[in-house]
Length: 403
Ligand SMILES: *Cc1c(COP(=O)(O)O)cnc(C)c1O
Image 1 (cartoon, rainbow, N blue to C red):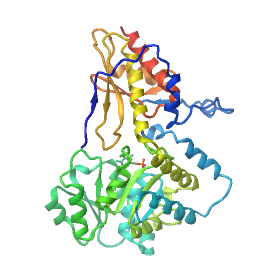
Image 2 (cartoon, helix red, strand yellow; image 1 turned 30 degrees about the horizontal axis):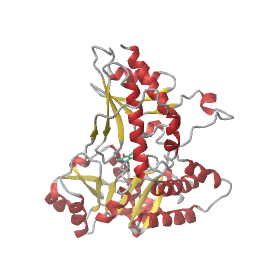
Image 3 (tube, rainbow, N blue to C red; image 1 turned 90 degrees about the vertical axis):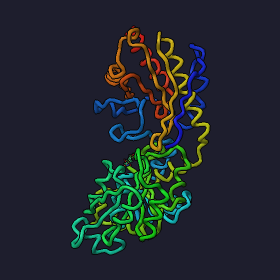
Image 4 (spheres, rainbow, N blue to C red; image 1 turned 120 degrees about the vertical axis):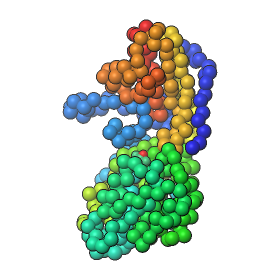
């Protein structure tokens, strides 16, 4: 766990302050608002466009791809590519950028967990690859800490492997046997009974490959380098969270022999278990462009932009009587960025946080925010620059309407 920063007592901006002067700073790291499209497919299909004042969520289409990503996809859409060659070249570049032996683009972190497990089971044995998940013989075992069990570990058991739960170094050491194929560390688990370093050391002593799932764990950008340095054999991040690549993409990187085996278990090969998790050239070029843009970004400036956003929205909301706001930074490791916590005196502003959430969601445009028992959380990092004042205005008018 890192810090929990609460930045209180933010100075009020002039109430009339326009965002126009700030728009250029915001625009630097955020997709620009679209011109009205020639053909509006949202309208044509009757799909509601949503403003995401929360965090990246798969059901809400991940994040908005960066302009660099859209450009990478569009500019490469006119030619075919050999997918083996493309994965070689893109993987090579990504490995170079992340200072690891090898890397690949998957269809997401979930896919990366499945492919890692498959790779640990099969190696480069074509017969085993063909048979997965119905390998004859003893069931392969993957070690996880009890407190690290999570929904996404179904990607482990999909391969036919069984999860062995352990607590503490001794149990981990004792659990390792000839059926053990991998040890999985969920980086954002609330509690760990084994440190990253010990987990790696125990696994290495017994020659068991380790995978670390850090799907949602940037920012900070340093996390893209931290875990391979600790010694994890494989690391995965989602492409469609704060790296802002295609949501149907992810990164898997680390040891060359394991990445080679993971690729044999994946599309474009026809038969393996990973074939239904196909990745095409759009995701490959897009993921490469997204990672490059993410690494090249001025992260300090982006962080300041986020703080400016919370401050700006906060100052507008505090014009409603009894409303107080503060910038809160999630301690992470997942979603470790600022958002705005909004509270009010319910005897003066007669509405509950969940009711504000519902009003935001069912209004036009539809806005997704989060409500706690006693507060509303307005996320700012996924807003387009032109949406900042829309969100501020809507929350303000809902609160004002309840006075
Ligand atoms: C989002 C997430 C995943 C799934 O990632 P996808 O890229 O959507 O497949 C897996 N693990 C954790 C911890 C996540 O946050």
